[in-house]
Image 1 (cartoon, rainbow, N blue to C red):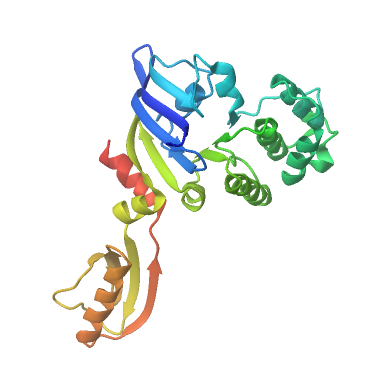
Image 2: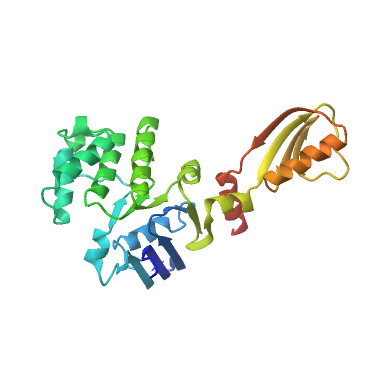
Length: 302
């Protein structure tokens, strides 16, 4: 029996007047995935998330969360989902604990204090439990946003720019907690402008541009297909063998920057230099970079 997709979109379209924010987006995110949704500003990421969360209605297509249609089965779909939005929006007159209790109440949850305490502990909010929201720093408010999204223990968690304006210490603690939730079976969907975060955490990535998916693959495949490896090598003398198995991206005297197809090509480069009797003084292998992949894909679909 096939597993239920955590999030399923079929031919989703959204128009705002003449603007087509989403153009026939189809996407399936499996249960337990750590999935990245990337794209430049205006690509349609926030619109897509708003449709999944039931905050915006699509003009065409269907969306399901854990099998529940976000329009026809709104209550069930919403209970399955926890969304951490970009904007910091709070009632300033409640404490952190009161805010989380109220959020629990929206989902009909009583006697939820043990889980609230655990969430606050993992997000390092214990010391601020009785502080009013208006007294918190921006970083602390963002922690509360994450806590609010988790109070009803949703199986699917959407993080929309979760570390924007957040200090390094919180960022590390937040990712530890999110990765733990993922290990425990929660599906995580991440949008971020910090591409190194997506590269580090996401198993699979979709890239959006102008309302369309322009790439959808495992992070590893995207890196290997569109980026390749760069090798910086300083030789004992200037000059390369005539039939050399790598592209030269830059040269500064005997210092060369080379593009390799993959790690196997490194062996061919070393063999070629050795056979030509050219000694290597210094060598540095630079791994594939998701930012380079992103920029090349965006330019290709310009």
